[in-house]
Length: 542
Ligand SMILES: Nc1ccn([C@H]2C[C@H](O)[C@@H](COP(=O)(O)OP(=O)(O)OP(=O)(O)O)O2)c(=O)n1
Ligand SMILES: [Mn+2]
Image 1 (cartoon, rainbow, N blue to C red):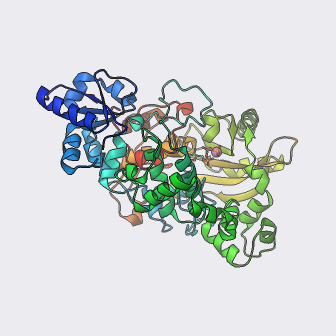
Image 2: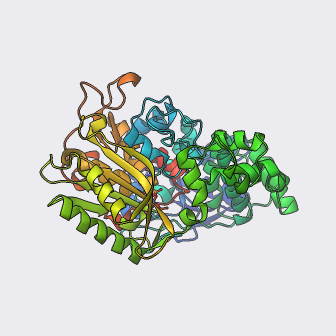
């Protein structure tokens, strides 16, 4: 029953006799009980948080790879005659995480009702712009609600939350994305699960992408949340029986796992990958501006290739541009080129408006060595001269043939609508070359600039964590500010009567939220811990 468990007992506060009984039982049932704590240990048992903290300090606990459970789990498992789910027995470092239990995935996602304003949409839609349909935004056909799979539905059960939020690997918000890290990050503990079951997780990852492309966020999400659970499983799974009590692994996932173990593959995935409809919709969804609903419509019209799409009259201007420069846009930009383009923008900006502040955010600011696009965040320190800047800037950049094609252009600074944020999305070229790159220009009034900079620097996982943390404290956070969350849905975006709290720097926002400060290059947080664990992340020790 306890096969695979290497246990360590925190003895404080427990009678010796009980300890001996548990030890004997565990050993009888194929577990190992270690006298000394070591890296091999998969499960630490303790009476409660206090006794745990007498043995380990908080830092050690954060780094612990093992699961930390109450002895009660052993008692109950023995009583039931089977390994009961661990989730409700995990010892939390931070009791106040309870606050997060009832939090939804993402307020921005759920009300895809057009009530978002553009700037929020823009940011929500960035990665998902190709896969987020239907397009309901009032502001632009390309500004779409975020249907990122992990944000698409309400939080699952509290027990799931509880299990993952306590998993030692995810207790630190500094958990970084090892696969994408290019800049040394001394502050972060790398997510490094045992990963004995890659045969399963690789297949699940492909299903996530497929379901996302099909717009089936619910299914996509169910694979998404299963991945960290499986990655952390302490040994190679040989039977679905072994995972049936794990959080997030329901009956159908168990069946999949069994099939993968037995046959080495999953017929469902093979079917999808050979299925013309799935392949076509995924392909169309990669075009900038086309999401699952449009992709499906185009498929149903009989289109099968990108060439077919070119002939379709129903494509919007932006979708057409996305199609025309399909390969260009997918080509990542070397960091040094982004740097040169950022400098060019700063030079031109300064000519137009002295003192203007122009920063390339996104993956560039996070230190990546290639970037999918350029996310430019702009403000002016005097708090007023930013008004009207973007139109002049864009014109100038077009005249010099840096900006080539427009996708979205909306100006609010003059009217003061939508928090006075101006937006331009388009395509640009590196000097002397025709290859098109995506570029976003966002101009924020100085008093909300810190929020814009945080949001557009990302990564998306950090943004979600911050939003959730803000929510747990009774606020709503987006790229335009931090608002007391008291409004009805009609007043969601800080409409009349609601003003953002004022912060001058990113650090002040982090501090206010109680999130540990992260330098931009430390903000490459890990994706697959982002789903359930991050959403229900236990903001402890911070
Ligand atoms: N669903 C999303 C998509 C984006 N963003 C934010 C965080 C991102 O870091 C930033 C820029 O989005 P990009 O899609 O440009 O992502 P990156 O710049 O991080 O990566 P890339 O190199 O692919 O551009 O916008 C977000 O919060 N949620
Ligand atoms: Mn980017």
